[in-house]
Amino acid sequence: MWKKFNQLVHWWDKPVSEEMREFRQKIVIKDFEFDLMPAKHSDLEDIMALEKAAYNDTILWPMSAFSEELRRTRDRLYVIVRQPETGSMVALIGAAFRPGIHEVHITNIMVTPHWQSRGVGTFLVMYMMTIAQQINFHRISLEVRVSNKRAQQLYERLGFQIVRRKTRYYGEDGGDAFDMAQILGNQIDNELLI
Image (tube, rainbow, N blue to C red; front, side, top):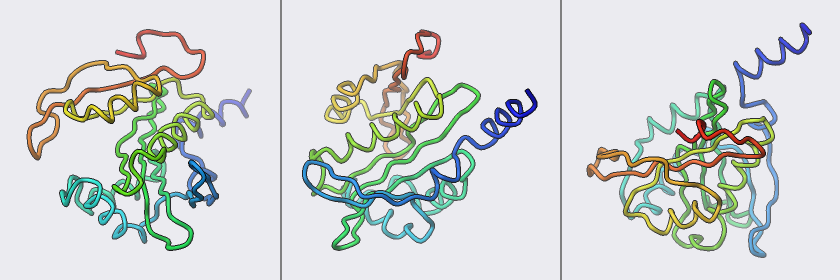
């Protein structure tokens, strides 16, 4: 019993395991091969370039915000996708792990314009959903701009539902966001959607 208690305390204190923070693997998305790995501080300049490309020269998160997120190895996981031939960064997904409510919250997802609509974003969201299920988290959530219909369709196709509208969520322009969530696995508890 003491061993199980210690495992629970460790899981509560560090939901993002060492294995999740230290890996490198080859993946194939629609016949294209990529490298998948956790983001490191040495990736910050590439992350900023990716953000600028993905959001039409707009910087939504300053480098200091990404740097702080990458420091939080206990409860955050940022994963990047790179082209193996060039080493260029193709995409990023970030998540906050909230053990108190068994939730993984996607904090950021971006794909360089050349690789958008080619399955990379879908792969990354499904990857984070798989991680959430493997560590017995029951809910995954994210925010999306109300005006971003394309992203909403992707999330709905993956099983996300709109939970509520967050007025003036995006500070840079005051845009509204939808809070979207999905219950994972066999967990049937409508309170998890609230």
